[in-house]
Image (cartoon, rainbow, N blue to C red; front, top):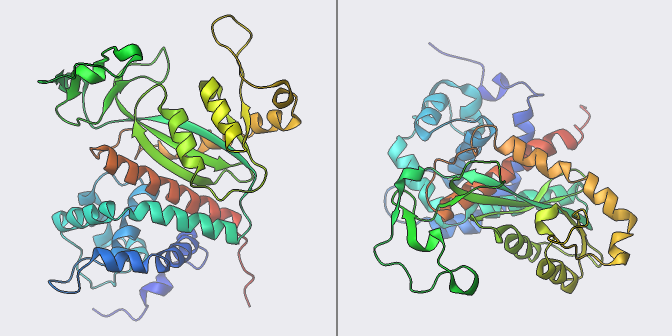
Length: 346
């Protein structure tokens, strides 16, 4: 049988994936030098990194559970074939080969570079606020169980707690994922093996401008926020909104030291939890605006954790961080496809 309709014409002209692919293609062009360093000029030809990264984006955008299911879907779904860059007669990759090549992208920090390229694309379309931002963190359940935590054969003499107190993470670790920690985000939640995902969003359209995953811990959110702030392109004036978990003396002081106005939610006056904002910061009319804009960052987490990141299937902090930043880039692409006006047809 012969088909005289090319695959390009089978995809509707107004399909949202067309706009996403055009943005992805422009971002991948900026990453050519990185891909050249990851792949050797000799040996057997491998999966093109551009196709590999597009396929990973499909997994996030369409909540595909595994690489095996992805290969099955690409085999018969023309939209997926077109997005990845395969022709209708091209063979689909072997699952093991695909997973092995994904490890190469993780080592090359491809998702981190993709997120930066997508943010620059948003900046070129004037979709970003350069002054007002929000930070928050969310729990990412690790691919391990509580029963996998066993006592370490050689625990340290001094722990990581206050005054050298030994904590559970000092004496026990998971045999499935040693970097996962038992943690709960709130007092009423169950303790589960977890990582933490952190994002900074701008307050105009809720786009992610920085993202990272860390080991779970009470101070991890504040440390990650300061680390991500250093990655941002800074203007003269900058505000950062946050919830009460960031209401801590050293964190607020560090923001002031970086010329960032802290718009952190405050506790109701009580003798246990102190507030560290100055009277000038507390009376700033922008504080109420930043607190109203905090809902935008919750929309990011809500979209990410519909399926793919509610419990990550990757083990190890490096892999979880790679997947989390890929999901942040995918969120931005989907959001930007709705924000950028469609050019008028000639």
